Length: 329
Image (tube, rainbow, N blue to C red; front, side):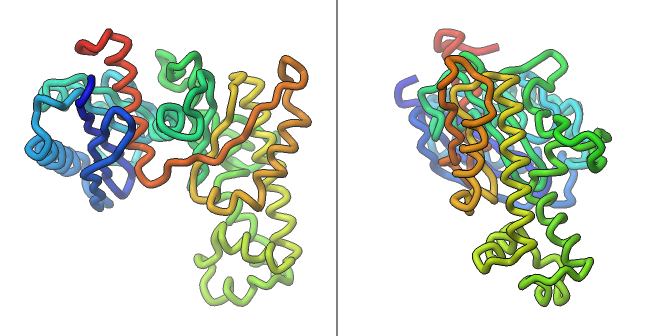
């Protein structure tokens, strides 16, 4: 694979990202296009345009494989199998088959939360570790699990990646998935912001009250951090709840998957100094591991804007390596 290059795509609900990746994880020719409100057949045309432009610039002989990250339940050797409503027309679209026919190289697809974990395992904070759990904290909670240097999967497509829907609080709020008390209802950035807005809606005194009255949508996770820096009582309470709940989610994942490290990604990590030390302390106290004094580091992700592209490429790289450098079916 020396001197070769890889093509990666990251399909989201509103944007399509692409990039050329070298064997060391170096990125080139990155692009982002707005795909909000368009059906997948138009997004597919854009993918072909991006891919062909990369081939024209770099030369087809060097292309080793194509990786695609996308939300929902994903079959690595097919594409999206279950993604209701988010990207219209993508369910049951034979993405791997079509890309393979278009570019003549191995293709792999992967859930976007798993892709972020793969990126950190291959090129980022978890490099060198064989067993990794990764979380992406944003509008929801994505997850990926690496066991023995390979992405954990199942024939029903949900292994590890649905951990954001693990029950953390019995009797808690109903989640979009239909379960009650999911991790996503407690530690996603949207859930934390909603908890803060609930205080403000009830007129609890806060330094954020005026901003909330002007525009409730202006209250974000960063607003929470700003409030804590000013000693605001409700912000301190909400942040303390977030620390505890996030740490409990991580401890549960450690008990389920026994990783060497846990990696956290997503927008809130820009403020990780405000919660990561407390999360680590909780994990050190409550994680049931062997040897008894084993430390499981909770790390901030190193890769940001194109982690999905890098993670999708990491998966197809591994498939080609496992096939001995030849064609991965």
